[in-house]
Length: 458
Image (cartoon, rainbow, N blue to C red; front, side):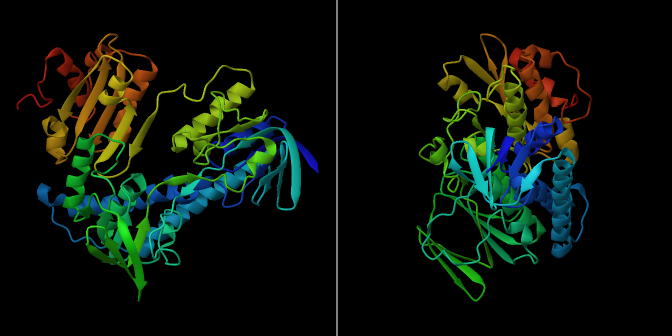
């Protein structure tokens, strides 16, 4: 058995920089990775999906340009689109390898499991360390639909290996992955049907967010099926047939399953070292990422942290600071996130309902995109900007932005909230005309009764 200063299990976006930093500082670091370096973000998450959506949304914008007086015939070379996606993915993957190699991290390409207290084995190697960090992430939850097992269905893991576009695509799910990939395929030319168990898209978001996206999806020709479940799956002669519980039958040459995520903790054998899991298999941690075994920490979505790359990366910064004696906690930063549909959804902080549930006296203001000069000029009239404030302190509690490039705009609110600024700071700001960002102070001005749209001649 060998010894090391630090063991990292999993090369996600928190584990990579943590391993590299400790190794660069002279520590003996061993990193176990059972799959491709870079975790889900680089290999089948953020990197390939956003490269894919760059092509899909370019096609979609061209197809919708008729309202601007531009009529084009969109031709999609799907194989070229996916070759580009895989090339970018490979570049990022190689970048991770170079970083770990240059830092001096010993990488073991094997599945790891605990074989004793703070002892990890994998790939014929057994290592003991005083500090162990688990960063194993999550994977797709596969429902037990009758007839699904053994069929060539897609998940986000193998989606980017597609060589040809299916004429018809069936998507089961209503979350980020289902919406982004489903709309992307529709915009590239696949007739797409979305099967959603609940009554609206993005179940965790407010209903009017879903309504905007549903409108956009219908404009893209996507079929939406709400409040239904799959009773039976059949696959014959290259065609999937789904029978829904309402009696509806849908056919498609491809089936994408995007019904949730589960933690990659099943093979860790964590009980051997005293690391407890919750009922869903997520690793139990305290406010400083400490598991129930001293010296073993867990970060990222395997520890039930919000499932975003930037959270995992911030977990690395938090944990590194904690191990260096600083006072950090697992949730000591404002949480923002985005959905890369078109229109986009940019979110930060709380909704009004969430604030009320916490006993906060709160208020909200909403500005439709159709009242924003830039939106009118560019033909982006779907969506709205919304801000939630604490009426006792005037602090900004959250924002929901639905519209063109709102994943970028939401950072204005994120920074103001991190700085603990009041809404008056935004209201007093002078933003450039005509921009989408110009409407953010206009949104704040609704709180003082000034509801004039950003276009002065309206």
